[in-house]
Amino acid sequence: MAYIDSELENFRIIWQSIADKVLVIALIVAGMGVAAGLSMYLGYAPQEIVPPR
Image (tube, rainbow, N blue to C red; front, side, top):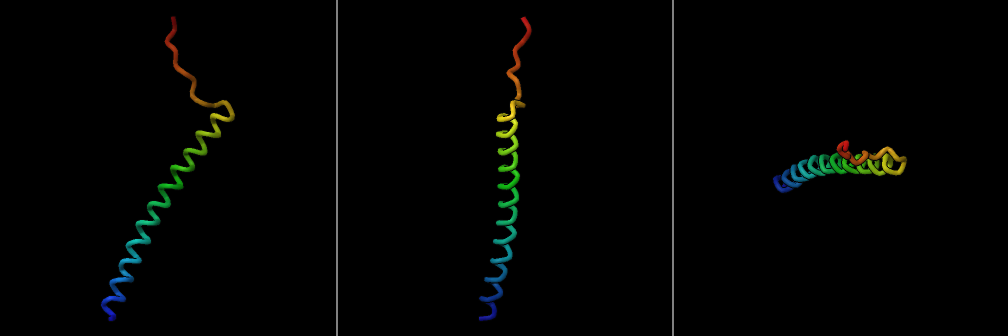
């Protein structure tokens, strides 16, 4: 029984480390999305590049 408990504990540790990495990536992507949306709202969006005539 102790073997099963230790295996479950190892699984929890691995799952938590994966979940932490996914959460950090999701927060970074969400922050970039909020920053892009805010810049568009404030009018600082990238201008369309038109070659001179």
